[in-house]
Length: 369
Image (cartoon, rainbow, N blue to C red; front, side):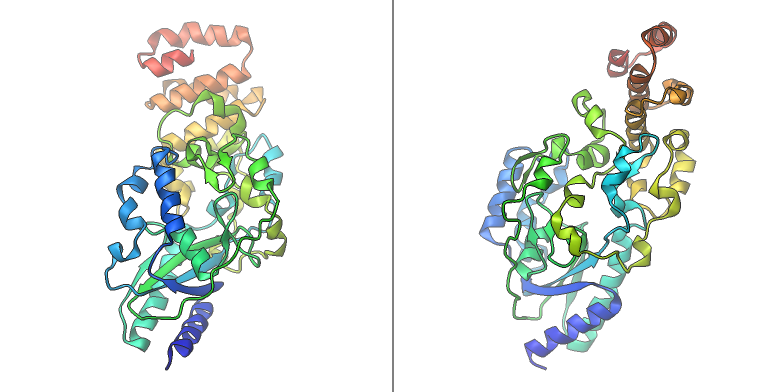
């Protein structure tokens, strides 16, 4: 088989396995993408994500990951939801979980498919392969644009003319030398909807995101207390944020994911804050079994739920907060105090302060009183 026939065969196998799009590129990163990464890190926009900085050199050079790599097969998996995520923002009684996390963990789903595909390729074409999905220092989005799967929109994520902003990515490195596909060009035009909708002004310019202001970063990656200046803007978002993705006009061409594992679990579509805030560690792990939400663990999750409760305007939730004033986590206690301050009257809050504040020995928690 010649290289064109090999690419055609690989594409057919990939689609049969369940991937929605497959494309090919060289095992290299453009100088433009490298410069963008360097600027991002130099400005500190990665926040606490030190793994981005620690692996910067390998991230910008695929051959640093595997010297023998000649080509990269880039695969896309559609996870488009069956609903408009923006409509859930008006429900102040529920916790809004990013739609990518309403089903099974995509890492597990894609890795299984990647390994199956890679095994077939290695056997059929007598080559070596390595698979990656969002857990290795691979610049997935620049590679996807190089391969022609989509372009990096002004929100910095991949946009596809067929799938909109709803694509998970995975890669197979191989020592096969395959003809790269034509890169995709930018089709955002003058549209700035993704920039305009951001409630925390996380975009300093088109294609430039300061993660430290991003709600997805704040609710997932940020490990400690969330700055008060962002709490009202977070609204009811308790794990991630879909706003800049969901508002993209290219989503009008997207169709619901055919992957059953990504279909929303009923209990995760609109979970009540009143129920979520009572989860202990065991209940949290059971409730989010197989979900990516479990990776932030109970402490950060309850922190997020408490911020949503503080934004709920629902005074009936005050009783749900009381037990958390004695929680073992200082992050949880501090967030509970903030939520109480938002919901309780001045008189109610004063009585709580006289009862609990003197027993608080953590400086940050005490400052919330």
